[in-house]
Length: 253
Image 1: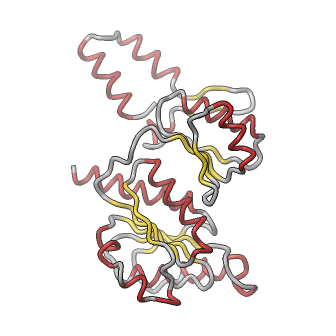
Image 2: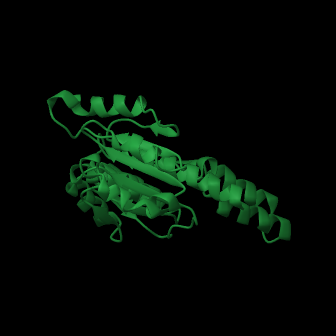
């Protein structure tokens, strides 16, 4: 149940279209659906503003399909992360309308377009970072944020980034995805007034320590306004960016 649906129920109570008892029953039955192997949280969209997202590793393809079908029955967008093509095929057998983004490793069902006026801009340092960047962009988009992408503009060729400053300044939130030494987040944060969500990736040579070097560089940024998520966590960055964007939208009326 999403907030708009909850408001509609309350409106119908106010106009007498449904009884208070019927409305109460809808709220009582909303919180979760017990599938035996999983308790699907249908109340999350009402509490947090976005529905539950399925993390695929550790679940069988059939379990992912059942959970996504349960979420799809609520009528909104549905998203599953870190999904293989095998899992996608199993889900598509249950929900034929789902799509798969192989680079982002995400299965999704889009029923509602982005609704925000404010933009989330997702910036990646190199093509090798594009999978994590696409995960962030697709997450923010499916949650409801208008999203733009600016890929392969790392510090090894800084002129590529500087040529796109209009796009950067237009964004309400900027997500910066970078591996190696992770310098791009500090550079972008020194250019824009918008908050920057930095995502270190595990891309790099041996001394990058699987993304630890980029993580520490981003945490030690000399530029203000940088928040850092975990290594390769494009999903977490997309959620955070959307929430910042959504709150800005609500503040603007």
